[in-house]
Length: 283
Image (cartoon, rainbow, N blue to C red; front, side, top):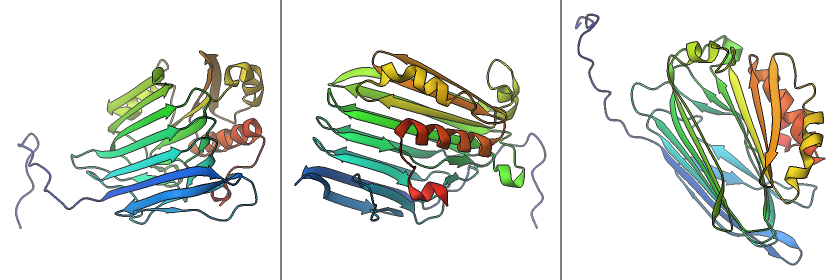
């Protein structure tokens, strides 16, 4: 048996492995007064299911048959919601990002909404295992009167098993354009001793989960007081706030209890949308 390297020894690069590359591309259109699938393509372990729903708006449910995302894996979701069409997008379960021995995992979400289109982007939470490395991008191109409601929740460490996200990396970038003009851009970068960084009052105040809810729908800015009323009691150990400018509304959530943050976000979304969340959220 070869001896373990001594502290301070030169680190050996992680071995090259076969990586998962999953992608889905969905285009929906308005036809005969309803939203219908115009094109669907799937690759790798990414699959999209469109279950029967009782409401007028169809749901698209993303399934990762690989069971999670390992270091170096890459996944892409490409949605095109045509003029007048409406869609709810979600995931079958929380997405798990496993620890990395070097390479980062990549998630790329690209959305396009035509004139009068509506999209509710409501994936379940992303769980980063300790020492996971994730680079995620969210890009949306909206027609002048299109409406997008997007929610993303990140949990740092597996709360159920008591795991702490002591170290790792998260790089999250959002870009939204309306009629070709950039109207929203945001970036988050956490790297190194993440738990220590988030323990600082000026950064996270001990948070172990964070959420962003963004409404870029006509009239969203005028709903700021409604949003703040819905956030009056976000849950134990959860801090939340809402702001509105340039026609859109943004909600931020930070929580020491990841499950409480998820429940608070779910209550807000149900109240704000005035309809239940997709059934997979209730499993």
